[in-house]
Image 1 (spheres, rainbow, N blue to C red):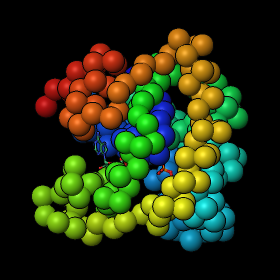
Image 2: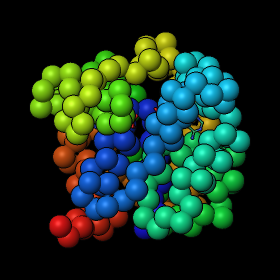
Image 3: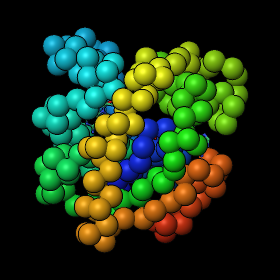
Length: 210
Ligand code: ADP
Ligand code: AMP
């Protein structure tokens, strides 16, 4: 199954994707994480991408679309988290089959307080929240024991810009996928467990056999 997770910054796309990966065996592709990995490599492209991320703007689609396509080729079960993020990107992947699009529906007021507490694993990018989804040991990733850090773009002025970009570039995708009858709306303002269960119900997913 091929799924797109759509929603404003901080709506919980990464959190839900990580659990679906663990429980249902999906390949989780976070466009933001993919770009942060490119930045960490300090390549020429990485340096260019960094300037967009730091400003809260979208990186040029030519980089993102190519990177995503490379990652998902030959894969049957994946979640695209944070991609596509504009009509331009959506049109460029019309050749990829999409089975469902989940809209993580939540207001800016609700998610704004999630950013101050967001922490990610500096090595693998796994996400936490100091209050809502704390790691077992403060400051340490449960999965690989690496240090948890704040994202450089989780600063109030950059967050503000990311919301502006979301409304202008990404929100039109709601209508686009609604017209294609692929859209499932989920109330993402609830507790993490409830949001997760709602997504699973909307997609009629079952846990993989262990
Ligand atoms: P996105 O990938 O959409 O930007 P994240 O999954 O990184 O969002 O979630 C943003 C922050 O909010 C993280 O710190 C995460 O742990 C936390 N979080 C995710 N879902 C919820 C929720 N339902 N309620 C409260 N906090 C949440
Ligand atoms: P995220 O991790 O989803 O919050 O994304 C972090 C940042 O990465 C965004 O603010 C953008 O600068 C960049 N980014 C993520 N996904 C995309 C995308 N699909 N297209 C362009 N830029 C992106």
